[in-house]
Length: 507
Image (cartoon, rainbow, N blue to C red; front, top):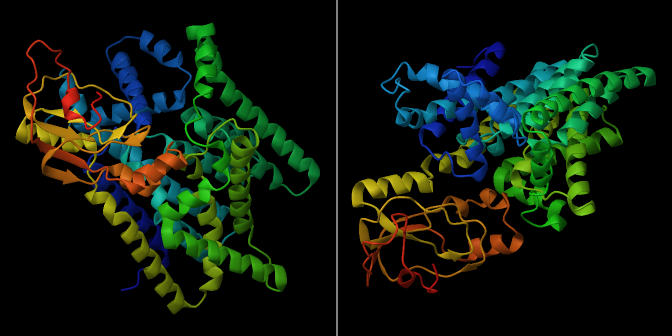
């Protein structure tokens, strides 16, 4: 049965919501280091809920992603409200806050759904017909990078939502100031998307026809962006004084994990591993339509030009500040904002190439099939936190070890109950200096480590580290030691393993 055209977008959004809620329910939160910043929002909400007004000043004193902290407080409020429907409604017990984290993750995941709607809305406001806009929304809904990040407490989709909302608002020439406000908010939700501010302002300015109109647009949007960027800084200075500036400067120098020189190539490597054949097909469709338009065909649609310009400028800023100026390393998350722009342009291109109804239906079915192939492994993926909980529940608390050297070690403040067992690689593996192997013994449980998923290896790992991760076994394993060592009773409770359990003899 073929649904009426008006139902295409609502059905697509409903499916996107259900898929994300199912993904969030599987756990996996707090795998990435950036997710810990969600806790600041929780602390802010709890402080305000209990009448501790100083909690707001404490939050504003931290410049890193302050918009995400404020957003996290709002999400925690929704989490608390939704928790009233279940058994963990009593938040005087701190464990109930933790037990209901999936509710907050579900609310946060809705920003990635909003991004699908915004791509459709931008296409329509830019003059694309209903078919081209529907294709753009379908491509965005099927984009892998628009899906798997939604599982985690990360600010990327929320910041991208602000940027797309700014682009949509900017297509109305009378709302330059509001466009700038939204563009400035992007930076404070996630500082790493600073380059989207000039991208959005430039797109808004260039959309005007007369030169004077462009200057007026740029002035209005620039004023709004400056205000949005400045207000949180002034609040932070009032709350923390000079320490705020020192923290800001120190934080800006931390975007250096990786290799500056690969800033031009990493985006394409990452997109190939993340989007696969679907991404390649979209790029080929864009190339074919651009070539046809240059030779003899009709010119590109306004929406297609807007998407191509946004992607090109975003890529240019990334390359300039990585390869050119060596200020910021490019990560997979840095490349994510290129995807909605490419989907916007790609939707217009596919609509032209598949104008015949039968071809369009076959093409849509193929896109959905490729998306399902990309999405399916995410639902079965087990993260270290979930594995650790299961192991402790079934076997007791074992010792801990790693099969790689150099990774940041976070001790668990619980006494070892099973010195005959060792849990290997049950944490994020970063950085990776070398492969050292597994302790001798019998493997009882073995699961693929999330870092084996290739797109995750572009979140700070250098080319050398990625090569090590791909050429050695880094699975999470529970091993029955062949020669277990006794844990002395007088050692600290957070001791997780002894030197004898490590193949290289080091802790």
